[in-house]
Length: 65
Image (cartoon, rainbow, N blue to C red; front, side, top):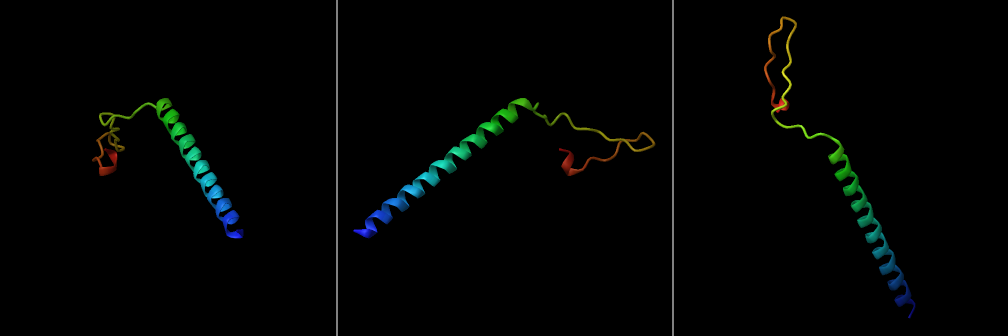
């Protein structure tokens, strides 16, 4: 009978850990959703053209898109 109590305790602790982890994930998802709503979305058409000291445009790199 001693094994049954430990099994129950283990199951309860695992379930509690799952619930806490799920609650943390939900909270993080909500935070990201709120952060995304606050930040304006950068569209691909908003590419920034940089110029050198002579006023000539610098070539675009892959990271610029």
